[in-house]
Length: 144
Image (cartoon, rainbow, N blue to C red; front, side, top):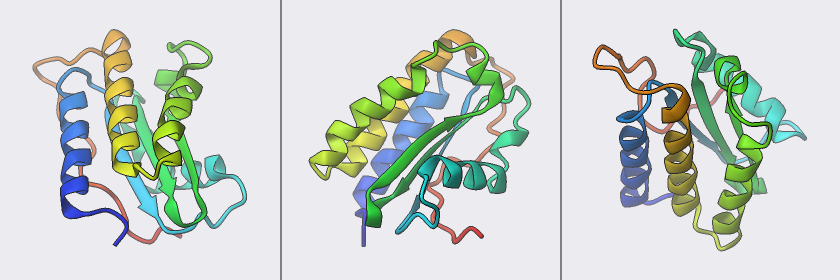
């Protein structure tokens, strides 16, 4: 087992907490190995498969992790990329990498999700009528 149940619960709680402050939709997908050379290409496939590109404000975020071959990527939809600073995702990625190098994958994901949520609330604040468009659970299903 890659992550303990407690670690998974902490990650899901980080997603729920982040989404309390933003209308952005955060998703984590974990698989053992990345079937492509470039994890960003795989993240794009997963993003589309999980329908993160179908949110009303195009403000979905995917944290993709292939733990077996140590690859990960963060992908935000076009609504986010139009408004955030140029190196927005790279800064979060680099911070997460420090956790991952210490094999603290849950801590890295929590930190990245928290940071993304803090930044996204500036551009996509939470509104009372917001609905949760994407489930907050961690996706591990096989994706073609």
